[in-house]
Structure formats: C-alpha cells, structure tokens
Amino acid sequence: MGKEFSIEPREVPRVETNYRRIVTPLPHPDSVATLEKLRHFEPQSMRGQPPIVWDRAEDIFVFDKYGNRWLDWSSGVLVTNAGHGATEVKQAILDQVNSGLLHNYVFPSEERAALAEALVGVAPKGLEKVFLLTTGSEATECAIKLSRAHGIKVGGKQKLGIVGFERGFHGRTLGSQQAGGMAGQKAWIVNEDPAIINAPFPDGYWQTNTSFDVFLTAVAQRGLKPENIAGVMMETYQGVGPDFAPVEYVRKLAEWCRQHQVVLVFDEVQAGFGRTGKFWAFEHYGVTPDLICCGKGISSSLPLSAVMGRSEIMDQFPPGSMTSTHTGNPVCCAAALASVKKIVGEKLTENAAQLGPVLRAGLQQIQARHPKVVGHVTAAGLVAGMQLVQAGKKEPNHDLAHNIIERCFQKGLLLFAPVGAWGQTVKIAPPLTIPRAAVEEGLAVLSQATDEAVNYLRAA
Ligand SMILES: Cc1ncc(COP(=O)(O)O)c(C=O)c1O
Image 1 (tube, rainbow, N blue to C red):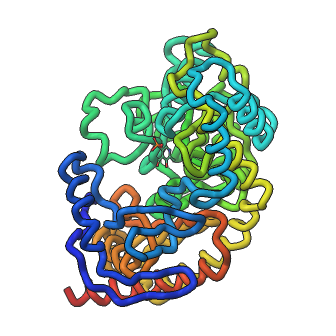
Image 2: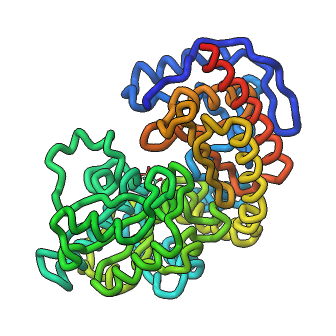
C-alpha cells in the first residue's frame, strides 16, 4: 500500500478513439509544477493517485488542460453516479447560488425539506427520517452514536457494543475507523474501545466459512452477549470488491438483530444511488435495515451525506442536540435533489443492472487468461473489482494492481489507485450514464494493460 505513481513525464503511445484521447507525454510536463506544489504543501497521505491534474470533467470523461481525455472508470471515488457535471445538477447548483441562499445552518429551508422528502420517497417503508451531514465518515459516526444511544435506552449501559467486519471501511475518524476492519490502519488508535469489535466478513474468498455461526462465535469470543451489543454496522458490499455477504447470512443477521434489539446499520455510502443495479444495494438481500448511511453518489458532486432510519432511533436526541454546522447546505441539497431525479428519471440504476453482466463477463475473460494472478473477480451493476494475487497463491499483489492502473492511465482509462486491505484490487466504478460501447472499450484497455503488466512483472 501507499505506493506513488511517478510524476516524471513519459512518452506514451498516441490514442485517439471515441472515448479516449492521449496526445502528449504523461504527466504533461506543464502540469508537473502543480503536482510538485501539492507535494510541497499537502501531507504525503494525499499523494497516490495517477498524476493527471484534472481540468474539467463531463459525463464519463475527465480532461486535462493539454488536449488529453480519459474515459473515467473512477467516478471520482464512486461519487458521480449521474455523470460528471450533469447539466441538471450544474443548473440546480447555479440556480441555488443565484437565489441568494448559500448557507442557513439548521434554520429551515425549502431545499432541505425537498431533499429529505425525496430521499424518503426512494427509501423502503420504515426508513422515514433523514439527517443530513457532509461526509460519509460523519454519517457512519452518527450511526454508531445512534446505535449506542438506542442500545443504552433499551438495555442499559451494558448494551453499547458495536460489531463491524474485518476488512470493512467506514471512514477515517476515530469511531468509524475502529468499527471498520482495516487492521493496518488502526495502529494510531492504540486504546481501542473493547466494545467495538470486528467479525469475519463472509466474502467467500478471504473468509471461506460463510456460515452465520462464525459471527456468533466472534461475538462470544470477545466475551460479549447479545445484551451487550447495540449495533451491527456492515458495508452493504465490502468496497474491496464489491464483495457481498451471502443472502442467507444477512437474513439470519437481520433476524438476530431484531430478536435482540440490536440496530442493524448498512453503510451504503458507496453502494447506494443505483451503483449496483438496485437503487439501494441492500435490496439484493431482501432485508431492510434500521439505519443506512449515505454519501458519495447522493449528489454526484458537492459534499453531502445522510443517515436515514426509523423514527424511534432517529428521534432519540432532543431539539438542537444532533446537528452540524453544514447540515443540509442548500447548494448541496439542490445538487442532490437534481442528481436523485436524474438517476430515477433516466433509469440509471437500470443501465447499471443491464451493463453489470457485460462488465463481469469481461473481467472473467481477463481472469481466465491470467488465472494464477487474478485471484478474485466480483461485479454488481457498475461496480467491479479485480483482486490481484501472487502467482498461484492467495497472497495480495499490490505491485501488479498498481502497474495495471498505471498502464490504463497511460492508455486513457482512468482508475483510482488500488484499494482493499492490502491494496490488491483494481476497482472499476464508471458513472452510471456510461454506454455499453464505452464499457467494452474500457474492458479491452484493461485487458491489454493486464497482459502487459503481467509480462512486465514476470520479466522484472
Ligand atoms: C463504505 C464507505 N463508508 C464510509 C466512507 C467514508 O466516506 P468519506 O470519505 O466521505 O468520509 C467511505 C469512503 O470511501 C466508504 O466507502
């Protein structure tokens, strides 16, 4: 993990197709000053993405200033579900700016009311209250707080445990990172809360025993009983993949939560808003949680997040005591409302559902050609992941994932840096507006980049 891409300009072959245009060395020599300025003034944690200085982004494309155009398979980081700079979203932002209201704290606004109503309108029955925040981490922190407060209310101070999952990710703040299961990122916490634990995540690859008994055993092994657990927080799919838990497992989990008055939280921050071919990814399980956390694709643009849930849980804190300075900023609300309308109106969820099998089949073909190093491939709608391993072993291969992404970047296909607990995954997440021909072109590029990277690293 943590490897940087070179910012030394390199000659690369010229590319000119319907979806990609690469006509200069990369990075462009004139952009290096900006890359260096960022290196100088920002913490090194901010480095690590392919070295393109974004100039503008439109629908499924990202442009630099120098005539290059990438087919975007990142959506930023699964944000621009309705496409980059969607006309409707841009117009809603402009109209809101021109209306004269840029900020109103938690004073009432029509924009917040309209968005809250629209979000409840696209959620299943039962998720009837919305609390707007700014980032995904704030939403997951808030869900932890709501779950604990609820646990204490129904079971006293012994009922405050939160169960997250190994290799899960809920953000980088204290509570969200501890509930997440990226062991390598938690060293800074040191005195972890003994009531926040992780259970194995039943992805069927890294964790082959996918029985719900494994969850029960993990809780018991930490000396906890159901009466000590306030909430279970699960990414609806683990971001490394999409890796889903088996439907049967989640149904048993939901039943166990119901029996023991445990709040079931699905983290939909990256999974929601049509990404997986269902509007909410939890629809794949046929289970409705008590709370969901939303973010990223909610607005396809400006920073906004939300916790949605049952009134009984959402209404625990009295007036004025669960707010945030930027709760439901009116410009962000206007953007989100336009984005949700576009996703629903243009049937982008359906587009994701239709193209999912194309994406999966393309990745499976790559895997079939390189079965020793492409360890695991998963896809749902327009999110997919290709996990790279050391030849013939089930050991993560970050270098190969990194090299594939760098080669795609040089060919005009933009992916963000490898993800996963060990940085082993090439993750694919184009805007949901992508047409089939662009999915197929991207797959051809990825396939070629994989062939080249495998040969290069074999020779190296
Ligand atoms: C599933 C999930 N939850 C929470 C977060 C945190 O969101 P943010 O980066 O907006 O704080 C992320 C971000 O990647 C995520 O993927």
